[in-house]
Amino acid sequence: MRVIGGELKRRPILYPTKKGLRPTRGMVREAIFDILGERIKNAKVCDLFCGAGSLGIEALSRGASSVTFVEKDPKTFSFLKRNTSPFKDRVKLRRMDVDRFLKRAEEKFDIIFLDPPYNKGLILKTLKRLKEKGFLADNTLIVVEHSTTEPVPILKAIKKERERIYGDTVITLLSKG
Image 1: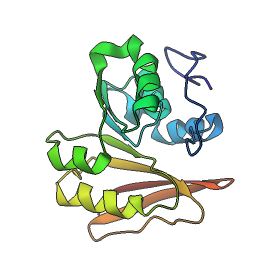
Image 2: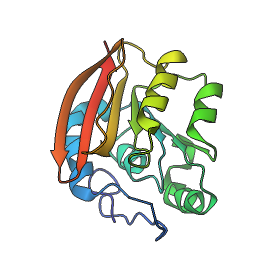
Image 3: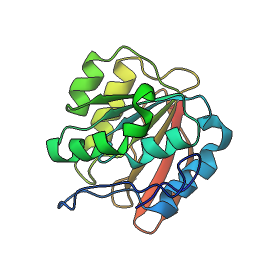
Image 4: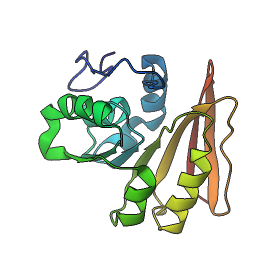
């Protein structure tokens, strides 16, 4: 897997070969960043359930000002550290559970990538926590990567901006409603 655009185009993204890890395919990343366009420039980004960091690294390569990566698995986290080393001054790495991070975090983000393990009910739980903790500013965009078998629940005060299907993967963009 490689960075597909920006200053580090073609740079490898390393990830462990581990059951259950599902790095975002290049075609899907390209579609996400085509949709985001110039909005990624100078954005403050949070990559939840980030795995080896492909979405956040792509954002940095395309001009995001900073990315906070959240991943709890120690082995995957070690790959994330290596992958983000060229951006040390623009990244924050958090090895912890996403819910724990959201309970403690105080900062606001322009774009939040949400790519939890498929079909585990984590989308609803995370969206509720984002709403409850006030992460949804007027300009915040949430990009959810999920399975076609697990639709994104829409909560009060959250609206669906756009949805695109790529095989068994769906990208849903949400904002404050």
